[in-house]
Image (cartoon, rainbow, N blue to C red):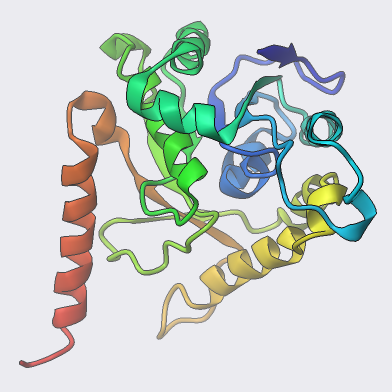
Length: 267
């Protein structure tokens, strides 16, 4: 694992933290925390995979997996500089290894737990969520939750949010949906996503993530004008740090959605 401290870091106490599967996920799922800390400092992140086996555009077709991992690490470090992160941890695991550790444990779980202990009682921990379509995202979520559950209660984050990347969360019942207002973050978000040149060359994550935030804001309320111009949706997963099984949590959210949906129909 590499610990990188950006030159732009403010030296503030870390109070907001994100764990993601891939380099460029943090900048989508944890924009709320990055935006909150941009001027005052206090945000840090950990990335679990090396990204070397990612899809390539023609421009990068001849780049080896090893060189692609290095290229993506450099992109992630540029984003950390742009976002003024306090710390960036690069675990450089393969997707297969992250999936294994999600089930069996390992050094990534223990490493995250040590990082969390160094920053006890975070105001917010941003993670992938169990409804995500991407298997490595779900594995990264499980790995982080395993780490949190190694902590003492007085070390655990105050809030844990599962945020959207490879599946929107607008389908959640309103009682389960956490709407994070990131109005005014457009320039910062664009600066962050522009760092990931190799990924935007394959898919326009920069454009799509900005469009999703705008769509979330517009479709947030059906009978009111827009109060926010950009919203990131999350689900509160803090209970998973206190003994609630993931399966039970998932079933509860789906059942709440079912009730919400069926409430529109007399039969």
